[in-house]
Image (cartoon, rainbow, N blue to C red; front, side, top):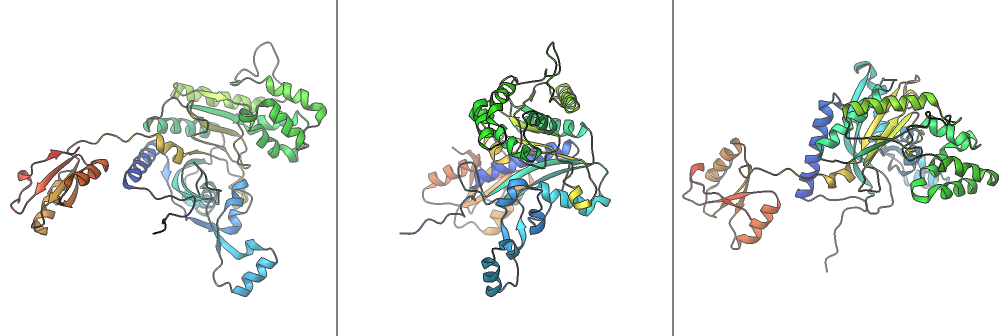
Length: 427
């Protein structure tokens, strides 16, 4: 019995209908972001291994696929492996996201770019994930980034451009959750967590929607970040925060002492500007929105949909990353769409019956005539496929209908002109 031949684990083949859906969604995303003033760039699928493991990619660095150095002998491989120096076996790696390559790209081409550079990157990335439903080792990311804009104008433009793109894709009912790293750090500091434990504490806070306030406090105590004696006060401070806390600095009750008021005001400024442009998509202040990447430094945001328990994309400000390449800080912010989640929600547009046709030709039809007919139909704007007539046409026509073709016509040895073709509906 023949063994199944499948793609590598965590990677997928796409049948024509699936590929058509993906390309349609990508086309909508590209055209929408381009209309918003973003320019598309392309970076190599590989970067230097040292750059991929420079601390810019957070936990994703552990998932990078390494590429073996050229010219290594078996003895050298054995020696390095024995010494436990596995990173020395590689000098290149597959990119695990598009942000690290963008930082390198900007550092390489800064002199040729605008002072405020707005980019689109749409490309596959690779991570050595444990394959499971919805989690792949190869997947497409769709990123927009603004480099060189220090104020909230960048966040406002990223969010409004993304909302416009979601609308163009036909995705309604979305909201944008938003928070600020300075606010998170202030909240965590008020619990007595040492600065070295901030990032780990944020990972725990990010679980609040799943494990609740009591679960968050218990984990913080278990990790030794919060003493048992402070657990009650930490629980009370978390429980007292509303799900949509836009009024923490207003009303009779004074604002919490830990609240970074400058950061909070900047979030209000972003909210008000977005509401003026896209009133149908609310911005929700969420104290427990963290975003996993350690390189975020300011506002962070995420796309939420009421029907799904996961985000459809997110991003934030990451000032400081590009400075790691340039030696001088450059402000930067970005927004990434969760393409693999979004593409399944996008509906394909209905095709005009005149746009996709099939020519079923008899065996005695000569090639010059057949392909002259096809060329003329293509010139008229149709999508045309030629198929040899088979004894049982029904399965063939059903497959063609599934592929998006809407009409077919027979071509015999007597057919010489397009006007002689008699089209019938498929299906």
